[in-house]
Length: 503
Image (tube, rainbow, N blue to C red; front, side):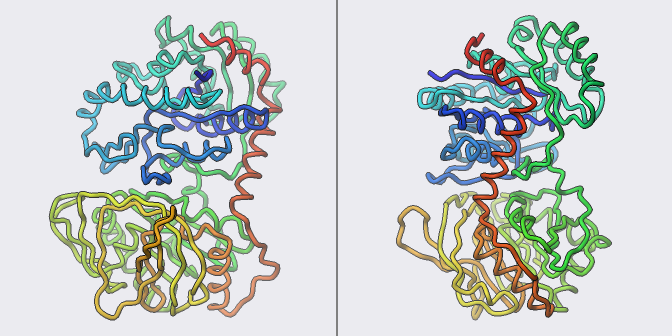
């Protein structure tokens, strides 16, 4: 069985996911076969494995850092919030059902056998498992039947590294308070402390580290700097939404829906010079972009109501009348249609009119489409006609069936990415409005570059020295930078000793 080590945090966004990825990359570089694991993840950014199973993208990112194929075993429970009080519960990659918070809290202990089955399967296959916790282990109202923090550490016999976020302030109180709120047997599991997101002169911090070790009786194994690493982050915690990027020569605006999902579909555009990718949640922020993207959402009908009430729907339609390219992905594609119907109450129930920018109709169904796909764009019209014939790959994950009205052009021709020869027509186009169910549709260099060149040409400009982006190679370079940075600031020899000693 694999050795295990666990990263827990004093709070959400302490940096657990990134540190887990960095440790996995270091272990890969050091010749170990290592894998990530998070028993329960709450996120709207999800991914479809080659088996057609759904898992959180944070563990996909960590698997990429480790140089291994993502497996749903790395994230056996995924909670996708549907509203403020409930989530769709996904177990081993398949939908169980929607549950309210109180119902899930009472039910989750029944899922622990599935968690351990997934963990033990991974542990039999790999040398090291780096486990990520969730939130804080000191949430005393949630500790009963814990399956994601100390409860998981005990079952996996994993020593814990506790991470605090100094960038928010109060890091010593975070770490000391967390340790003191733990039960005695839980405190014994914490073998090292890490201060994360530090900026400045570490010598000024050193006296505090000595006091921290004295108060906790636990060694500090590193002070990690604030890192500007471009890897996929948790959807609920990303800083991308709060950046106020100025419009560049080619300007792309993504509508930040309240329940936005899979915004990672658009990260590739951030890699091009002369291109701005902005997240917009008010009419005053929209400006005059060259392309407006309506992203995926966990609740299409509710977010369409928000779009309508905020005035953004009217602003988008007005921009469309002036020729601005509008592209909808998954839930955003559904919004662009004529009607949405929910006869089985999958989302809101009932029916509502869409934005009327694509002649398509969507009916929500209880069954979820989950598949990896590959194919190519068809013969396109409008500003993005340059995409015609371009190869694409990605995945579908949705609970709606969209039908095209007579005479509407399709967008792509795709099939299963793993050998299924049957192709289907997918998506829709009308003028400069495009829609598709395929997540990751822009990821390839051919597609993203063609989109940018087409947008530039539509406004009569040429981007000089537009650099080609091998997005996969770019991500690999970011993982290496992450690993190199952590090697400089963490005591990896001590961390390996903690791993080897276990508990």
